[in-house]
Length: 537
Image (tube, rainbow, N blue to C red; front, side, top):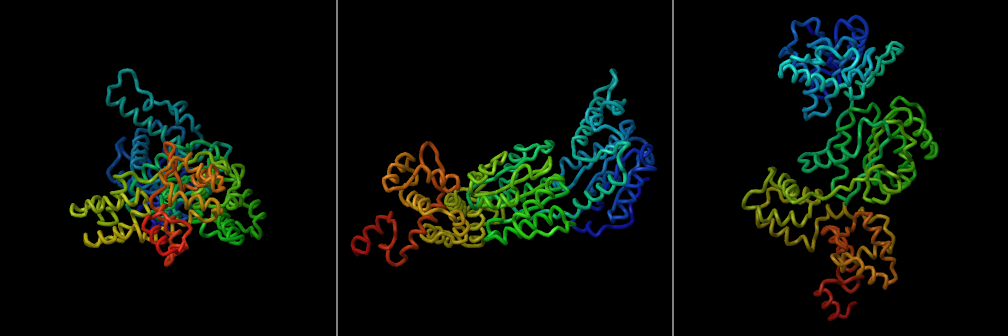
């Protein structure tokens, strides 16, 4: 019968699983050697381990107790040995493991294959010792038997396509055991990042980004994610990190780099953090940025890593944290977010994903969760909700901020807040959007303000003709602002998010709060008349 270790790891309390490890193997092949040593190592390191042995069971059917153990386990170690595919029990157990992890919402449940003196290709393609009566149906097999065999074959292929460990006769088993236990320790000790609640639309973009990359590929892959401030780039990369982190022993998430990195010493601290994350036992000190570059290159090139660098706004930050593809070992995945599309292009990312605003249905759902704590608005708030959603134009930051602010308010209060938004936009939202203007040259800022105040929705060629007449290099400036996600170009017309436009309006209004004549631009006819009458311009 199956046995379990009696010692519970301290880390097991960090996740809801009863067992840290589920150990699946063919007893006759490995019970008295490799698996015994592996099991002893797991127990010695405090991992609560369920050990199953098909030779100690009767028949080929999986018991309900064993199914419960599979559902309650975190990591599955499947030891593929020479006679594994000769066992109906082993194949049924593997099928249950694959099905349990493939359809589970908890992506932290991991299958880790170990190929013990067998070729992974034989497992993947059911060749060699894996071409057995259970993987090669006889001619007179009935439909049910053929279907079962097909399921077993699919499970073998799926497991063999996962990253794992190959133990051949010339391999040091002690070294492999140490690597496996270290890998498990890293997975169990890794706490998922908090992404948030009501992640409307995130799963769609997550799938699209996952399709941009191939986990099976051995190439180094850099993915850049850009978009307007508040559109959800940080949320997106946290979800990506949680989705992929279990596949990487070495990983690091550098959060809000643009906010953290205000100077030379801050960037040096980020280098130290990255080194510590990737090499927690490393003793090397980093005193200068130049030294940090060499130290990081030396560490990163020896092991595949998952690295997220969030909210980059200067080229220097990338040069000192992830200089190029040659810094990284095969299989590494690097995700970089920025409001500056051109920065990601210049860094030669392999894929560039521009995160869009939410569509209407998604925006209304996200707003409703925060305003009503339910998926849809109440009937008497429906029209008001639509007006707020229209105002936010699919920007998640605005939808969440305004929805939370309006929570528990009455309809007349909603009307009052809506009427104020044009003149007094929400500062929490504008403060986030204002970061997009950091580092703009005076010319670029002037072009931005002119478009916000006068030219939104006008044809690009018309705007360029007007602004060039004022001494601006408008073609270059518009391209720069578009790369900063501050402008859009559609059908030849220049567009701008409503809230970005409001930011531009506020910047100009603040130039003369009491005296409108001190403002650099006047676009409201009432303000123009007031200034002319009072002769304050």
